Length: 493
Image 1 (spheres, one colour):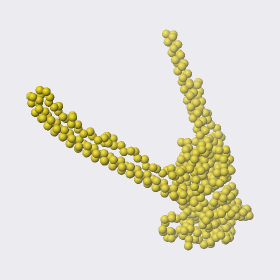
Image 2 (cartoon, one colour; image 1 turned 180 degrees about the vertical axis):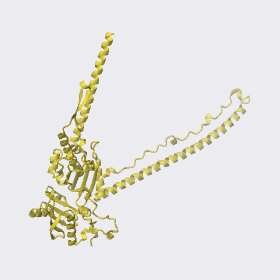
Image 3 (spheres, helix red, strand yellow; image 1 turned 90 degrees about the vertical axis):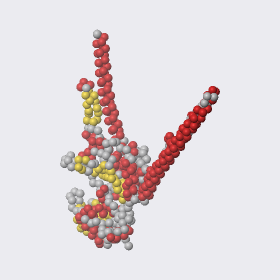
Image 4 (cartoon, one colour; image 1 turned 45 degrees about the vertical axis):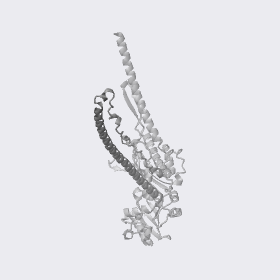
């Protein structure tokens, strides 16, 4: 009995030891998973640098793969009947003398009849086999033809898409870069929603990217097993660490996205990328759905590709790129986007629109200098600026000095407009900045009916200058002045 008691006590101690080990292992697994998730967040930028983000459209083409025709049992001819299995044995010995020959002749006749029936049945069965084999072969050929047609249609669509992309068709450009961002692998709890727009006149790609919310940063710092209470407890992550990690994550996603877009552009269709990082969340103060912009950046290929992203500190890198970053992203404090996504609307009428001459919307390129000047002045008056002085411009545009009446943020504003068909040269941006300094203005705005090159965006970066291209102008006219206009160089005499 004592031996049994000792054995039972030892078994109970072993059970408890194994239980504690299991709980400790559970905590260890939780902490390992937590650490792995943090490392994944810390390396969001680094993990994409070894990935080639370019999509070779030729590899999207398919080749028809046809399995060999397998007829199965239908491919084997039916064995014909063997006379030897029907033929009766011939009489022998005494059977020949006592009527055996006559009986043999009867059996032989019956066998021959049965053999003939078997041959007829075999011929019918063989004909049916060959018919079914022909049907199966025809179906296989039809299936092969269907696959060939589908592959041919797919490849034709890929070729059309590749041609449209090479021609910088905005829809094709947007679709291609949408595929690039769709291929980017993020943790499962990242939203990975985005909108893209392409402005061919300035070779600018605009991205509105949905960032994860603050809860993507684990609130738990460590798991612990308290043996005395048989309980797993958690240690909270400090609020400051959560905020710092979140700010770093926002910066990493921004740099990663811009990097992927520029790297994927082997055709050189994009000179400038504008990135707006927004969060789709709920305002805790009102319960309303909000989408604050936490980071906005406009950068050129030349500047961005000169960075060594393996060594940069993400937030410092954004500061170097003159990005506007929320001071309190954890509190959803927004920044003003350098370009509202809604302003990137389709500029030109459809190329296939044969009724273009009947379009009642005014073509800004056909307006007289006075009409264009009045339109621009009316626009900025509707936007809240007080235009005090104007003078004609030598290039058919309008130059004016206006005043923003808002306290603190307001002041003198220099506005220059260029009614151009071609890309605005960087010298015009430099001239605007010189005028701004001469006038002692707080801000300069350059408006054009065309677009800007990367040199213009580089010069304006970090300066109190705002560049509004043709698509932005059309949006502002419709939104603030109620003017539905168009910019159509093909409609000029």
